[in-house]
Image 1: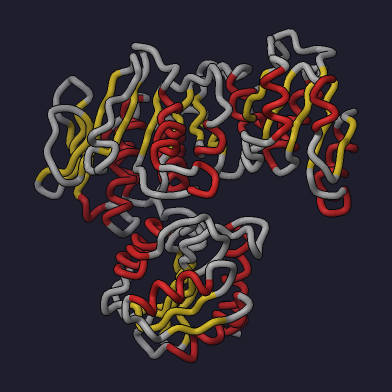
Image 2 (image 1 turned 60 degrees about the vertical axis):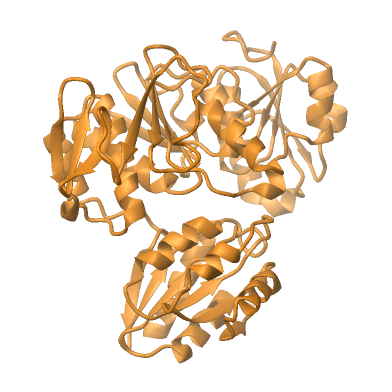
Length: 457
């Protein structure tokens, strides 16, 4: 009901008017559906999105509330990732037999291209971008979409069977897939995250595992053989399962042997490149590279092409991104560090004494392991946002006392400079989501970079 190929004149609610919701509304309007675009925010709070939709579509609107009273009018609902699936109107739709799907699911139903779908707690954006670059270098017309910033529905009508779509997929998007069936699904790692949404690790693992639930024997599942959860996971799938590992030699998949990346897809081992040739630093990025090698290799990329991209790929914005060196102090933007495990990896990547800027929205994560990772490397901790006192309490209980509280990124940057000396690093890696103070982690990262540049000037 609602999302069949013949969607013309069907009434579809799109709930949540961030990027994916706006894109889904435009796509449904082009298909001839009657779209009601809804958002809990008031019209003036999302004026840019509303102006865009008024200019380009004939949709109607519902602002400032959940669309409980509109559910009965709908033939289907497209739910933005930020909207909890246990919302009352979603339950009401389920009781009425009205299909509720994600924007990713909507795009999939109209996409002719094979899909490489990448999920995991950390490393999704880096790996998605890397796979996209390798496949582009291989000569494939490649669209990089999903949680990375470009909504899948932006390209659903453009991508042909000869193209390829590489999609970063979050757990929130996976909650409301139905038929979504990638050619290759990649799960990079699983560590505690989004417990405020998923409640338990068992729920979180189950939601992540939905990425391969519809794959058939022609598909591939790529898993991290070094991850303590994924190495024990028994995938409920008909697809072929391949592993990558930086710690042990495998019979198939991708691994490190004598400091070289090796890939075997069943036709014998192929050497890709030396691990020192990989441009992006850190053990976690070696894992991301191995996952990217395997996914791109499955899609037909040649070893020489893969190696060429790995030697030049600079990583992505907001992920351990070097911003500037001022008075001998190097500033790094890791705003993409939105959970403790991600920020631990950033701390591990620092090579000198470091002042750490952290804090943000409370996702009910534990910060114990995060503070344990400080070791002798973290010399001072600058905190802001909703989790300031939670992180400070954890740090103090573990004997770390050099803690400073601030109210803005600008203040955090200025304070960090005074706490540093030549040879130091200043690392923004919040270990938390950004939504308590910012629109998203990208806005947080941009404001940090501008604050650093202001120091330089």
